[in-house]
Length: 191
Image (cartoon, rainbow, N blue to C red; front, side):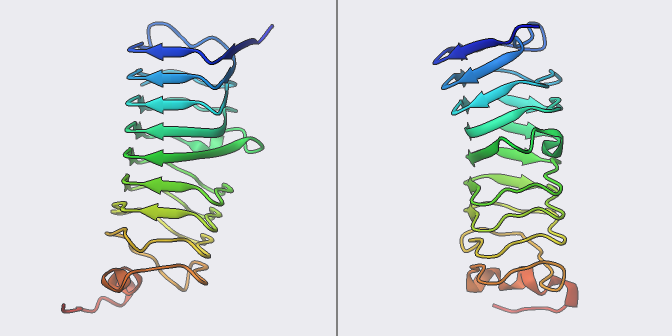
C-alpha cells in the first residue's frame, strides 16, 4: 500500500469519525477544531504538526508517530500514548485538558506541559527528566517509579508525589507545593 505524503496542509472543522484521515505522513500540517474522537490514527506519522482546539477522545494511537508536535487547547481523553511508535516521539501541550491518559514506560524527556489540566494521568515508569509542568493541575495523576529529575513543578498544583517511589533529584517545587510530597504521611500542614 502506498503512503501519502502531506506537507503544509491545513485541516479545519473536520470530523474524522465520518471521514478517516488517510494513511500516510503529515509534515508541517495544521489541524484546527478537528474532531478525532473515537477515530483511528494508527500507523500515521505527524512531523512538526500543530493541533489547535481538537478533540482526541478515545482515539486509537497504535504505532502512531508524533515528532515535534504541538497540541494547543486540545481535549485528550482516554488515550494510550504507550501504544505509539516510541522511536519518533516528541510533543508539547499548551492549554489542553488531558484526562485518563497513559504514558506508561515512555521516554518523555524535556516534554513541556503548560497551562494544562492533567487529571488521572498515568506516568508510571515514565522518564520525564528535564520536563516542565507550568501552571498545570495534576489532580490524581500517578507518578510511580517515574524519573522526575530536574522536572519543574514550581507553578503546578494538586500533585501527589512519593519521593520514595520516584527519582526527584534536582526537581523544582514551590514552597506551597511541598505538601504534595508529604501526602503519604497523612499529616496536616497549616499555612
